[in-house]
Amino acid sequence: MMDGMASEETRTTTSPHIRSSATGETPEPSTRAWTTRLLVLGIVLAAVNLRPAITSLGALLEEVRDGLGMSGSVAGILTSVPPLCFAVFGVMAPRLARRFGPGAVVCAGMAAITAGLLIRPYVGGTAGFLAASALALMGIAVSNVLMPVIVKRWFPDRVGSMTGLYSMALALGTATAAAATVPVTDLLGGSWQTGLAVWAGLAAVAVLPWLPFVRQRDGARQDDGVRQQGGARQDDGVRQEGGARQDDGVRQEGGARQQGAAPAGQASAREAQPALRITRSRTAWALAVFFGLQATAAYITMGWMPQIFRDAGVPASTAGLLLAVTMVMGVPLAFVIPRVATRLPQQGPIVLVLGVCGLVGYAGLYLAPAAGAWAWALLLGISNCSFPLALTMVGMRARSGAGVAQLSAFAQSTGYLISIPGPLLVGVLYQHSGGWGLPIALMAGLMIPQMVVGVLAGRDRTVEEEAVR
Image (cartoon, rainbow, N blue to C red; front, side, top):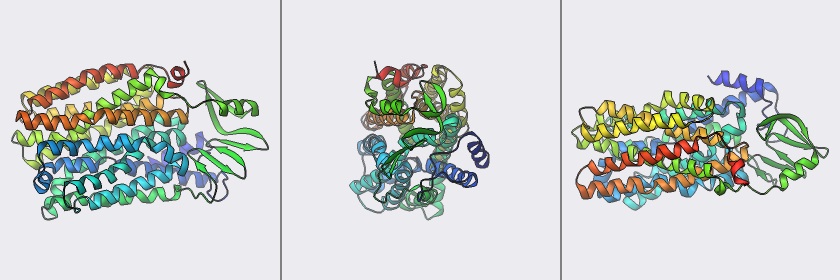
């Protein structure tokens, strides 16, 4: 698969974004192909590590609660930490990428995940556990935001397929951690600390492919897509030579595809334009709310679903497998849904199908959690594929790489802020009601507005059209 993508990349674009760090010149085709393969590998490995920190904890939540002396409300706070960190740190990602380059930020993110996962089981106490978890989640947050940006910038002609690839890898990592954490913990002696720390090894491997993409500053300011060298401004895909602004490959403007050089006056006019006012776009707000509600459902599922099954009499190992089934549904569907979504003018029908699956899954979880456990896990897994759909819509609702970066940061940061109360409220309702009836009713109730705003976010328009009104 990687070889095919690399050869296609070599045919369809000159890969202006991948240049020699020493000379700033475009590499030879063979070097470009090798670099593209390495970049695809880096994207896949990064995506695999974006959820094990969360689902491994969900599988062992009861053991962690007992070991650290947590109440249900405190455990609810613990399950709310991921969206909180994603909201707080995700908004920093575009600024960090402009300063250091997206490759360097993702590399640092993988290192932060490694360190956080390695130390959090052993720091002792709830506060230390939360702080170390926040370190890992900080790395996840910036990588979450930059994945659509990297795909849009390096693979502009294959946003759907590349989004599907890393969404599939993300789902695979999520499911693997959910299914394997309990058996691995038993294999390593039954200590929950060891069972959580083992996932740091996977994150450490993900650091390696990104090392060649860490840009050396050497006194020159290198932005996300902008390099200043010798007084000349060089954009990702745009080089200035002899005072003329030249596109390395393909420039998209107003939805039309243009090749060749743009006049210097036009370049100056574009550079003088104010930054996109993303908050003026109704589509951006709809996408942010949709992202927040699907994230709420996802983190409630990852944090609490194994406990729901365990309280219904399902063994711990089976409960972990049920969570894995839910997560593994994203492996094939995360590759299919983005490709289908990019071929439709509006993504509302996909939103509705996923929402109905979620409603049926919650109804079954309420009425017969143990008897139909595998069916409910399957349906909720289909519903959770709203995540790759949301990422795909981020890439489709903006025309330029800069627009995608702003929209991705806004939608994800705002969305994760919206999702913070959900897992916490589930924990509070569970503790004070003594059962899962009210929490499941809450989950089902949130699916209705998710479907409504998803249809609005899926309309065929871009944020640039709305933000300038």
